Image (cartoon, one colour):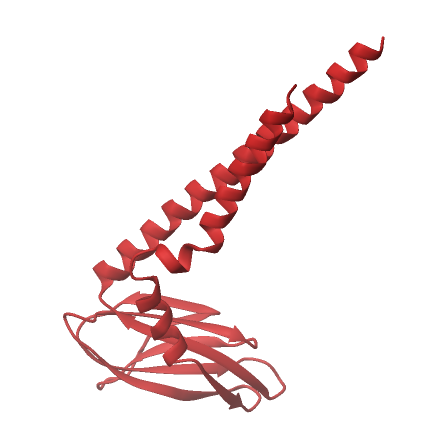
Length: 172
């Protein structure tokens, strides 16, 4: 009987799924990164075709990168050099991830639409090496858990098909 193999496949799938769902509880430094985003979660009301400086920040050698993203709304995020001559370092829609030289900068949320809107955003200022390692590790462990979950589904599905074909052969 392949019912045992089907059960093993379901158990492997559940292990992979649990690994994905419980990732915030066991992955190193997940709470540190998440707390930065939660702490800086904010909403801004923007007039049509206008921008607003929402943050002025200082980059040091230790904390030399910023990750900012829009949670709701349709807007661009611009990072502007905070010392004269002022210039736009980066302007992207939805998300910005930059390693910056030490200095002062401003973050501007820009509404490109012809109607006013509320934009919810968040950001975190991190050490570039730390955040790069964090997201690389997170990507690897997520991929491993997805492979385990899909492998469990495949094992259960193939065993189920094999069992159904065996039952059909026995009836003949």
